[in-house]
Length: 408
Image (tube, rainbow, N blue to C red):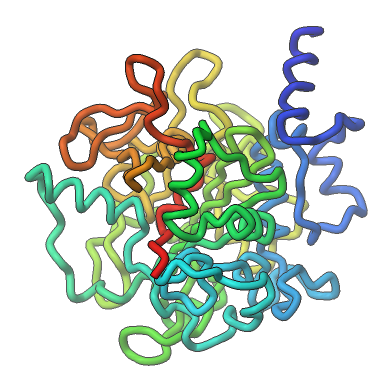
């Protein structure tokens, strides 16, 4: 027990948190603690990650004060309104509230773009595919592998966005990581890795066009799409937070994603759920895959009751030395069974030439410990060479820094 206590104390010290009295996560939900407050609880993240993921889900999906970019404490959870994470800064280069301008310039103060969550141009510059799928398609093209044909029926029906909270954004801005030159400077300074602050968070969201009849079952927005103003429903939500040195990774999906779909005028292709869900908070009996929502946290009667926690990842391996896997059937479609958030993101990197370690190699996707590859040659890469010389600076698991462009 003494060794465990010392280890936990060291984890807390790594993220700048002082040990405090332990509180059971379920007891926290039963308490009068404001559920809209953005949590930061290393102890809970480490020992009760599934329950903690639901704390994050509720706080980040709380209706927002869009001008202040914070939760509105007077709002009711589940109201049809922009939620907290939708007010955060966008990683997509051409988004109106981008954190990474195309010209590599300073993206400005946190509150400079306050109303984008409700603007018709909300999805301007949004990706139709998440970054990891774009990277996989590029890899398959270069390696001569099979690539999905362009599907005109589902084109423009799905959009993807990545958003940075205030602590993440202000660190990016303070360290000038919003352009490639600022990132290269970290490598040239001999920095082994950068380290985001403990309250840093990111979300990755996937949306698809839905019908008017679908709206009561989805969190939805109305925005300019391929065919004018369209209704988009939230289908997938990755949440990652620096509560732990290697971050906490949680992924949620709408229950409709379980349905296998070939793709049509409203549905992008869907392959269903190929990894079982694991949620020890909602499903306390092994194997923890009942695919239900937790009771007693006020999801019932809201559209959020249609979302499920697919799993949480806090380490590369489990207690039996097996590689952990975590996937969302939307952004990780076609490589769910080999997906590992923590392993892939550990390869976020930069060197003096502005190159990065690639995360797809001969095995098709990263599992277990990070193994990187040269995107052009296909040869294995590491952060150091055989003589121990630094080859890449690790960017603290934050792949959105890949969006940075050169200063003009």
